[in-house]
Image 1 (tube, rainbow, N blue to C red):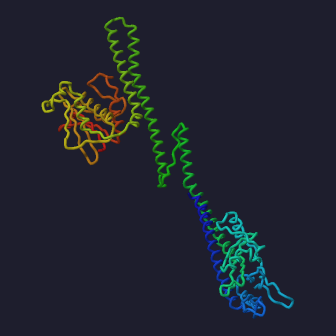
Image 2: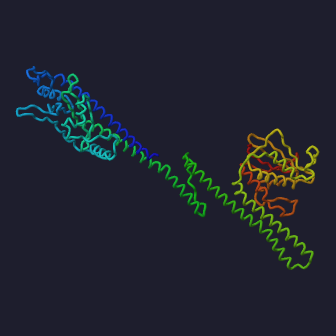
Image 3: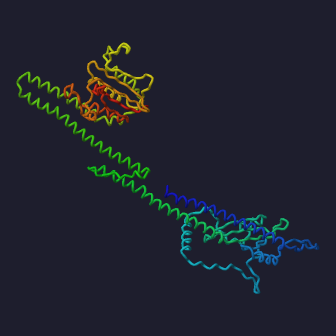
Length: 531
């Protein structure tokens, strides 16, 4: 768009030049029309005299008619031509030349008066620029189209257009273009007496002054064009440095990150610019850091998977090798139980690892929609009841393991994926049930704080070791002293945190303590944005 400015200015200048030229020509023609009317009026009053014409009928007196007196007409033409800017010629109605304003009477006849040619201006830098500009602009076609000047018929009033119009009693003006490209203007007016056309006065004016005005304005337009062109070139260079060079740096840095194998490549920090390129640099930096973080996560995940799978594989290999040498049926049966347990553990690990590895991709494809947490929590509570207990009303069942403490007057609507949120809360409820004693209860509460909904799941179990609270959401971490080792993969809370993060929420854990500051349970809280 910046580079188009100069072309637009030149185009508008050309359009303006065409209109300006037309207006100048029209003004000159109006001036010649007035001048021709002045010549016609003066000659009609001063050069037309009554004359006697012999009657064609014998013995009748000569008839008195009016005609142009050549001697008076020449004198008036010379006097009028002294102050006129046009060359004037007077023709009779039969086409004869009666007078010429540029002819002076002398002893040996007439002398032709011509304007002295102007001295050529010395060639300087400004004149050279004007000449170059004129030649350049001559290459651009102008809107004004003029007919070729018929110089061979100008003295023939029967064929010259303006003279023919004058013989009909009208004043006619025309602009012409000569072979050398210069403009010439003509005007013809009738010499009338009582509506009778006695002759024609023809004015011819060269367009030197007109062409000079047009040339001046053309040069001015060219100057403006060159100025705007210079500005656009400087703006292009400036924008190239302001936009193009930084974008190239970002592109090269991004390419280096793509093909590089180390983290020494850094995206340039252009955040101080405060424009779109600065925003782009911030986004690229964040994206690069997120990419490295994702690679670190994948690397840690791979290491954790390898470690977790090696444990049951080592146990399984040891049991298989020992079973081949043991001949005692009871010992072989124990070894087979160990093998069966390790196989189940491997199967559980592989299933959970597969789910965890696919979770990111699946979350990016799933659609978010309005979810009623209240209805979701009620369905999850009912899912843990026995089939016959589900038929009983809540009013008749006070010994439930899962207690929902929800206010029916408030709406618990969030925006998210219902299946994934059900997976999170189902996992939290399952963990709470597994840690609660036989007669313990799991309490689910919900509160609204500003624009967020906080759902808490509390149990009456042994709580979480203080040193391990920050580790329970890590992959493959499990802390179940009351269960056999290997019964859980340790991915449940990690997956739950991953799902809540994808919902732009938070999940954390804390212990419930009594008045003696002893642990009497654990509480997990989930914070989600209200829909």
